[in-house]
Image (tube, rainbow, N blue to C red; front, side, top):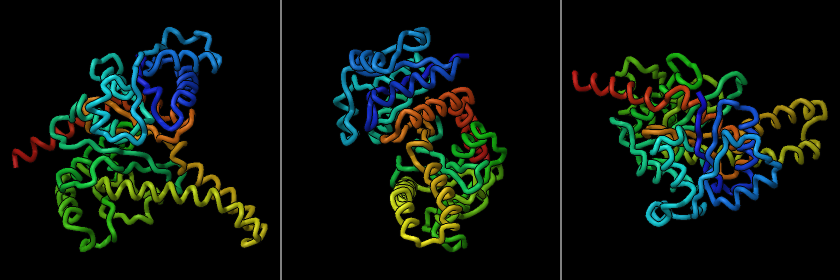
Length: 345
């Protein structure tokens, strides 16, 4: 089966200069992929030529014209109301119209979420969609998915419980993890820690026998590879994510200078520097890329705004996997089962 992805080619900090080479790279390496480049046709045709495109993927690559672009700092409500022919909106519309099976965009996160929720709607039983992303771990063979990363700054117990269900389904489907271990992000591991919403959510998760809830996790354990899904509200999740990104930037800019100042012995530096450099690369959001807007009646993948071509290519690959694994359909079935259990009880 050929998977068709609508790519918002104008979105992100770099626009077509990175989305176009990303598209060509993935098309070269994925023979079962078709792409719809959404954006200003003249600009996209010119950029394709600049990158040496000579029509070799014409059967799998088309341009869908969109006359407007949503700015990265544009208010979501304004974009939703005033830019109905933006590349972001048109790409999502293509999913709604079943001309594409998923949308990928590096554009304005708030506008993308507002538009996706308005156009695609949420799955039955899901109150709010969430943003779920990948974090690296110290165990190279494992990774952890975390949600919500910023879609909902105020979440109820029901919301957090739904996030846990959705995160578990996606992790099992995409990563192949059976009974993924779910943890709630809190300010301590003891039962008395956390605010009232976190405490009540913990009780709900403990009562849900189908879910493998293992308790609280603290922020200093995010990267230890012991959990598969970490749940929190969007305010906490986004602050945590930005702190991780800031840490990566700080390490990248300072570690070489510090080593050169002989703060470590030469032998220690020779060992530590490659390790830290590797970790920085793995936590770099432009590389470790492709967050899913989970809970919608369609697949929308958010690429980091600063991502370059390889990062955007990774986001496209994530979209392909979620299409093949039928993630929205699996979530809908799981949520429906929980709703039936709750009604029966």
